[in-house]
Image (cartoon, rainbow, N blue to C red; front, side, top):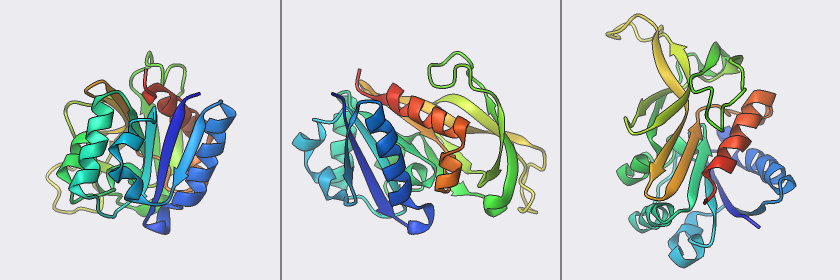
Length: 219
């Protein structure tokens, strides 16, 4: 049975426990063995980490020790998958450049808050994660992210910097919403949706999330 470690905590505005419990149940229904942890201490045990086929991080903000991130980098390079959504991944441990190398992107802002109406456009219609998924509209936070050129973009959104009067670019730009990345032998998956549980439960968001987790699992 596939073993998944889901770590949750940090800033409570993203409902890390509720969202993690929800997806843990969905993964168990798909016959995965899920271990939940509300502490980062588990990351100090390299030998323990390497037993997992997938690590899901759901920890907004916070700090990660150098030894902990080195352990994650090592086990992912050896084949353990790594996944996360929304701020629990790209707004986690922003003081750690080594963590950012793993994630493929860094949260900067979400102008307009959680009342933004925007469209998520599926860019790669052949990938296992996004195959047959439709473009969809959503009302939630629209993440502005700095990205690693090494990522493979699955979905995008058009972004207008309306509340930044001094922004150099006043025209819409395309920003990634979902992507994959390789790290050694490991697969990494992320999407920027999931500000709250209700957003995570939207059918297309939930399906993309679970497909992404499945794709990232150690092969």
